Length: 591
Image 1: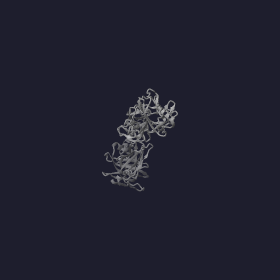
Image 2 (image 1 turned 90 degrees about the horizontal axis):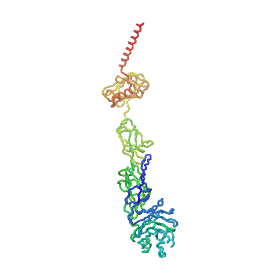
Image 3 (image 1 turned 90 degrees about the vertical axis):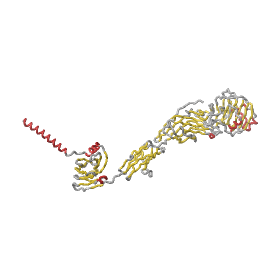
């Protein structure tokens, strides 16, 4: 058989949140496959005939839109429907059949090279009664070359009319011929044991079903076969009982190099398929297991091996007798399913982080449109995260957390229902105790000294200070006195260890008091209320680079130079006065 090749049509369809592949193996002409024991027609495939003498086999199981009548034999003797309207029916003996109207319908066959030893076999159902209808039937039911059943028209019709008059039923007829000797079988009986018949004109190009000259057959036909040998009575009876073996026991079509993208689960769908009398179809991808088609479909096939160059094998199996072949018609479609769960990344909180607030912000990203939930108690209770427009960013906030260690578990599912429940981070909540606070009255400023112990400094020591008031800080390795030098509406100036620093309202600064590269103290100016500054002092331990320490002190402290700058100012003024005196003295002399 001539085989054409048509390329694979691969279509990737992308829908927001669902990415799946549709791969169509085009069956409109010939499949692009490597075949073993499989015959291809136009957009149609079935098992090879194992009986080499079967030169024509038309089961009429498919009504092809182009008017083709398929020949299942290995000779591709496809016929053509002539003057047909809606004459196809699925109510045949087995599967479909054609009904000829007796007016103009017939099937035109190509030239078939026949021997003088042959067998005609078919099922028929007559629609007319009487000898004339019988005569027309006998002439037109099957004609090959210049020979038809017409050459039995000289039979005694009265003697043979009774068995032929079963108009409402399907009947089986087989005619075997050896030279000029013919035997006729009707259903499971021998109707005529021996009859002289005309030899076959093998050179003629006239081959029809349902036509002799102007005559047309009125009735239905099914399962038309021609063998290039004369079958014996046992073989004829096996065909009548649909138990004759004529197809190979198995066959395969192999489609190679199919790109399934990233989808490792596939649905396989056939546009049409035939599985009559217990015949069946199977498929596998790569080296996976064969799975049976059900109603021309296989769902959720798990793909193993290559996805970018996958091999699809379709296996054809006949019924238990080898009487019927499974078959496929039209396109083969592979639907790649998205069964990959989302890739989930927790942005915050970070693993191992510590929050000093009882409220923790949660931020999660996914690589595809997903919905996400989270839990901080191993799934006992879950809360949903709010997703952005594309479903790839998810945020939320967990409030009222007590101090302690937590595990944040995030559960995300894409729109195909694939869930990722394996992403988590550990974090700690450590909210400091409320800072102790000492206050003074608003009357007077005084020179009160407030003493902050090391224990209170660890929790945070708050105090409202006026000008000239001091805080003595117990730092564990020696005390440090902080004095308020001045307070304005927008800043407070503190003297810390002999150096002055300016703190704007709502600012803070960190200090390395012993110059060991570690911040020891953090001071905050929380607010300025009239003549009072709401100050907070806290012990810290934070390693910083030296230049960063200097930068922070410069940005926040606005360090005021030591009193040494007064000395340099005085020296400058003296020099200016001396220069001015010398100039004036010279002018007086000149006068």
